[in-house]
Image 1 (cartoon, rainbow, N blue to C red):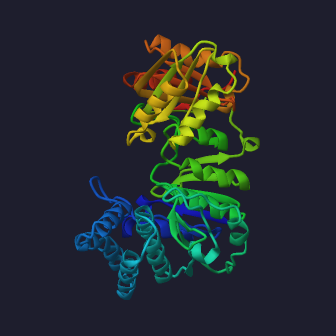
Image 2: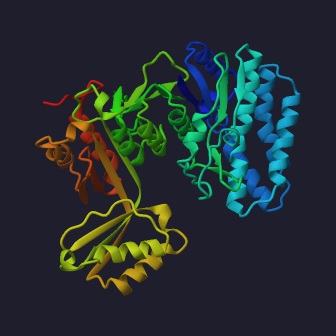
Image 3: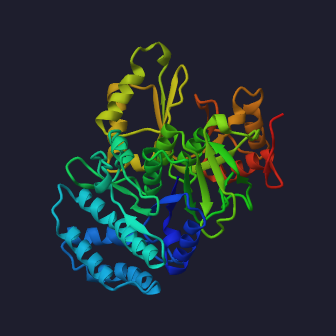
Length: 459
């Protein structure tokens, strides 16, 4: 059995949904279909999820939401009309969404979670009707129906481990296809809670593990995952195969094709993932597999980069001899509810790298003050704009000269490093550079390790 997830671009309109129908019909193993909310149809269009968040804000502000309602249901009405569905389904969906807006919630963020999840719910309801209309026997299931319970961190839910045993009990008839809404689950208190944005990928992976699928297919709008951002390098090499660990490193550092948290259930279930293109389903796509199944011998699998970081440099002599020094810093971060990305250190220095979004609302100033008062550094300096490049590849493991192979091309391109850190996994090298050098550095590394659209092999 295959679990198949279709993203928002695959479900944006009737023409795209026809492609989805053809894909599902072409393989009887595609038994469980996870759907996203309809995405953009053209440049400048808006995703349904964004409109639903606007609706949530209007509800919270006690504003008239009618124009937003109209924009949302214009999209669903067009899809229903394309497939000549019974208009009653639209009436049903409108009533359902109205009831969600009228419910009471423990906080504003849970109201936002409940409403933002309705794009997937209504998409699943509509796609179920479409499948039955075209002769595919389909049944909609929901997180409530199969016991997909999640944690209570609003709009950042985590699956509760006990859910997997309940999901495994789901009965699927031999002649039916299950349609399932992505992006959300249900707390133990019965509240709708969403995964982080893009979380339909996570739903698909959870179902793949819970139902012990043979393969998780994730359909999107690109032929494969590329070795580098196409905005930085023209016609980059496609990645035909990578390991779970490589995908985790790359997606964290900037690869946006597949949600990094979705890898975890697949790892736990040892289920391979195939990222494919709805518009070109004949393309092989990218396989994400356990390390034991990896067949390629590439030196480097991919290069990711992002520049939404800030770094705090702390200098104090003999840090290495001060028991509990790092623990003191971690306690301050915990008190301020700040998570950090990386913390490379030396005998007298520590650099803490943060995602900028962690330092809003005055938390940066509070962090600075507390470190000065409690840590008493000899020097403290913020680097307010910081770019990170992640070079990833199973071929880096135990290979002599791996670091110089990465750093030398940057030197030749005139790029200076502000930080170097090799991950404990030994499959990644993290480089800190000035934001203005990010593109130049990425292109230099790529040109040194890829040739004619293919990765260079290990020696």
